[in-house]
Image (tube, rainbow, N blue to C red):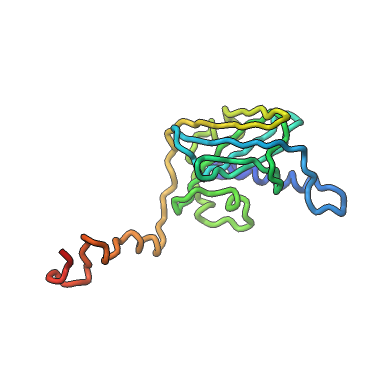
Length: 196
């Protein structure tokens, strides 16, 4: 449970940040800090880590809390609250979280910050060690210059044990090979009519 809370608290902080930095009474959106393009690639043992979530937590007063999903190919582009376009220049602690739900799929940023988080995500387990995934102890740091930049994070395994994957009825059915596939016998046919 502590791992789940540690992985979710940046999103809660981001929500609180949005509420604390509201503009004038006419504005429904938070004021956006000056942002510069900030992106990169996350890999694990040289392979893209799609499905992870990257969080930049400012160490100094210059930065702004920013997050991103890691897409196919391991690519990420930071966003501030709902504003795309990077993060503010400054020094950051960086966490990369790779939560895997009980359905065997990574838990993305949208699911983590949803008003109703599905049970599969609630019971998710962090697969990366705390030196990467916990903002309190991470060894990852980035200094974003005024022009922005690219920050790649080549992580090293192994992954931590995942959750017990719970298969639903649809998943159990998909585990059965289709009977019309060449070379597979249909268990519903008598032995004399099986394909050869």
